[in-house]
Image (cartoon, rainbow, N blue to C red; front, side):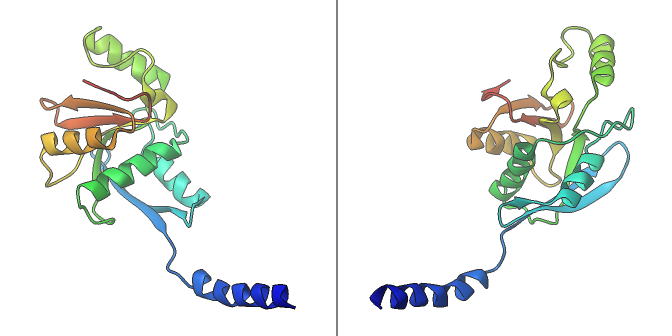
Amino acid sequence: MLGGMVAGAAMLMLPHRAAAAPIEWRLALRNVHTGEAVDALFARDGQFLPQGLAELAHGMRDWRTGEVFAIDRQLLALLVNLRETLGQPGNKAIDLISGYRSPATNGALRAAGGAHSGVATRSQHMLGKASDIHVPGVALDRLRSAAMALGKGGVGYYPRDGFVHVDTGRVRHW
């Protein structure tokens, strides 16, 4: 009988927990090359949402070829964490300079810039695991520092080009 009472008491608590506000991950991006903007809800209560993931993959596509590639979910989470670390609201767009990059585009960029172009032969961009970004209103060195403080992957600082590279590869910086 006591076991039934305990189980009954536990069941009474479930509706209260279920009524809690959902945890949502949203990301707003603006592609600086195409001018396109995307504001997508891509996860709710720990579950990824296919439509939001597809919207972000399209927004982060290789703008030169139009090729769409699945973006690493950890990269999306990293961008949300970075935005939150910077104290930016969820609906404020991050400027996207480069997201997914096809092998053809990566090779062309590397050839155009030479071996010292900053374009890696095995770039994380080709795996959908990297983005080059700028956050309007945030100094580039502050963006770099915030990305490095997260300790979640690679961070490249390109002040002459006006962006910071973030990826979900091994932790490193340049």
